[in-house]
Amino acid sequence: MISEAGRSEQDGRISLAAFRDGAVRELVDGAALHELESGLLRAAAERPTESVWIDMASPSPAQVGRVAELLGLHPLIAEDMVEGNQRSKIEATDGLVHIVLFSLEYGEEVQAHEIDLVLGDGFLLSSHPASWDPRAAGHFRAGLGPIMRSGPDHVLWAIFDAIVDAYFPFADRVEDAIDQLQDDVIERTDRSTLSRVFALKRELIAVRRAVSPVREVLNQLTNRDLALIDPEEIVYFRDIYDHVIRLTDELDTDRELVTATLDVYLSQVNNNLSAIMKRLTGVTVILAGIGAIAGIFGMSEAGLAFSGGEAAGFWVVAIVTVAVSALAALVLRRIGWI
Image (cartoon, rainbow, N blue to C red):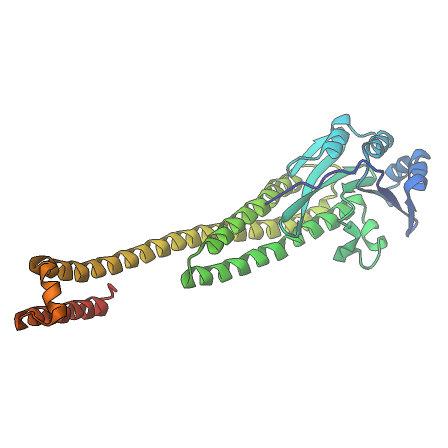
C-alpha cells in the first residue's frame, strides 16, 4: 500500500552546485543561501555556459519559503513543495517548469516519496526527502561536472531518468511474486494465499499510481515548446518516455495476471467445495442404505443376535448389507466421489 513520507519540521540540508569555467563549486546550508543572495542566479542566467543546481533534502517550510523567495518562485509552487500530497504533474508558469515525481521505496509496504523539480533560467531546484539521494544515480558517478556542463535541463534529465530507472526493479519484483503466487494457488487454497493476492493487488495499484502520470508528464515535456528545454535535450527525455511506456504496459499486464490469479483461486475453492460435496453424497448413499435395511428389521432383533438366538436369515441380511455397502464404497471411490 502506498503511503506518503511526512515532512520534518526540522531544518533540512540545502546544497548548491554551481558550474562555472569548466569547474563545479559546491556549497551547503548557510553558504549556499548566501551565494544565492549574492546574485549567483543572475550571473548564471546571463551566461549560457553556467548553471546552478540547488538541492533541498527534507527542507523545513521556512527553508522552502526562503529559497523560493531568492529564486523568485510563484507562491503556489512553494506551497505545493511544503504540503506535498501532489500527484505526478508538470506545470509551466512565469518562465518556470515545475515537475512533481515520486520515487519508490520498498519496506513492509511500498512508499512513495514526493520529489519536486523546478527548472528556471540557468538553475534547477530539487526538493526531496533526505532518505533519497539524487547524486546516487549512475549519471553522477563521474561527478557533477559532465552533467552540469550541458546545463540545468540536462541535470533535470539525469534526475528524471534515475527516478524512472528505479521503477523497473519494483516491476521485476512484482512479476516474480506473481509467478510464485500462481504456483501456490494451484497447490493450496488458504487464507494466507488469498491475503497475498490482495496484498499484491494493492502493491500494483500503488506502483501504478506513481508511474502512470509520468507518461503524461513526459508527453508534455517532449511535445510542448518550452524555452527552458534545449531542443537537443528532447531526445533524452523521449528515451525516458519509451521506458515509461514499456513499464506501464508491464504493469497493466501484471494487473491482469493478478486478476486472473484471483479467478483461479476462486475456481480452486469452488472445485474443492464440489469435491467435498461429492464425498459427503457418497457417504450419505452408503449410510442411507444401511439405515434403510436396519430400519426394516428394527432394533428388536438386536437382543436375540447378541444372545445367539437369532435365526440364520438375520446374519445373511447383515452380511449382504455390509457387502453392498462395501461395493457402493468401492464404486464411489473409483469415480472419485470419496
